[in-house]
Image 1 (spheres, rainbow, N blue to C red):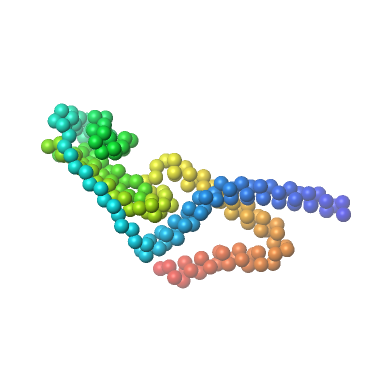
Image 2 (image 1 turned 90 degrees about the vertical axis):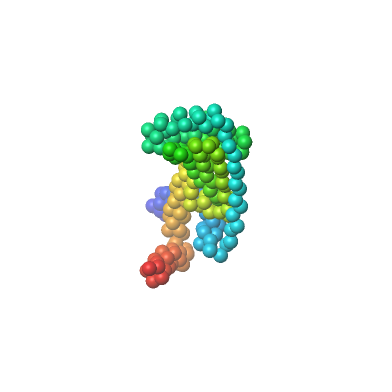
Length: 214
């Protein structure tokens, strides 16, 4: 009896530790797991789920002094391989007139126009300015909240903060899965269907991939 007590205490310690790591990691990735599960389903059935995009188009003309300043800044932009942010004056015009934020993005500068792509989750947008006459146009496409969530799933045009969230979520999900596997191992002696079910979780997707994916 005395020889088995240290083993029991060791087993109890590791089981308790695994349970703590398991529930903490599950709490961290719970909401993310629900989000990625739901959007995994919607992405898998994207062809059956119709989305009607809403398109917004705006047109205008900048004042002549601003257009002249942009022409003066064109050589400097072209020296950077045609990639440079919009000048503060143009950013201010767009923000004041159309309430559109263009900061932190590089535009494409050419001899006759400035073009700025503004992709985002759930839609796209772009801005084009003609340097010849100062005409400016903006178009925004909104594909709805479902497309927005699907893009969050894919990490499409979501920025650095969301990218960090995906990395942290992936790490928490890995800890959740690995600790769950060890907890299964420690309880497997009293649950004879444990390893057949785990094996099924491996064999079924492998067979589907080998037999039906070409």
